[in-house]
Length: 411
Image (cartoon, rainbow, N blue to C red; front, side, top):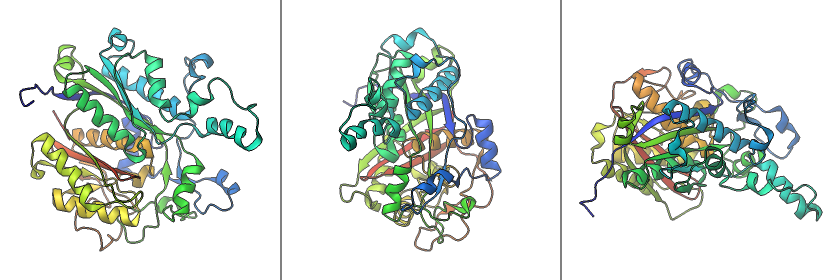
């Protein structure tokens, strides 16, 4: 087993649909200006029993005119964002309409927490009204949990491996991790990887019912507050982020642009509680990624935190990070975008890569007074910080105790 050659794995393209913007110029401007995308959701006033009215939506999203009704009939909002983000990523990688897409050498590793709620309502009409009148031939295709991955594959004609990661908050990071492992072992040349989520009040209600959603409805710009003693819960967002993950030698042969190298990945599960995170296994997943990369924690220059602004999550994550990585610069991008569930792992990895390439990192906004129960980390707050580093760690932790840690290198 030790004699098996491990292929180097790089990222050669990225595409993003987010509440902060759809390209790096827009996203970086929002980060540098510490501009939150969180807003009051007027439409949610109709849900009288739900306390939160906050979210970070992607505003004015629509597919370009070249996406005909026939092409998008199997796509709900989450799949539409995924496919468009993938088109952007393939174009940046120089692979859009390339013959290799249909060769069998390209696979997909992609996920979302759920499919489209509008399609689900078509199904639930059967249960509530004993009628199939709302259903059609595409209802299930838009509702199914792997709708993003399958629509990407069909739209671009990929015929390689398919890994569908419906693991909530780690769907995007697991997509990247499984893509990395697939290419490292030589089973594919290229993988389309990432995650997406569409905003739905039902998801906000999930966190609302367990008192984990922010209710600072009058001051949306002041929440969420990861690691802050005045936090009152998370805010949901939406979006899609796709990375093109590729065999290094193949990328070099075709002269592809290289954004970063993936050098380590770890994933595990808590195995103890469905919604309360466990410090020990969070620490273990970081140790797994370090061991996979064959590096020491001293080599890491920045940590992208999961940082949801929930009490148990913030405390456990910070203590686990200190235990394994030590006192390193750390910040949470969810303070800008809210929690985008299936999209967050991919978006945060991509944004952290871009910041690493430019030598600066965004602060956690709304972090005024660090919760004394959190570890004494080097929290980036108030302003962006110039940091020259070649290696960053991106961590994500999901409902059900699914943990991931990615190590990304500038080359």
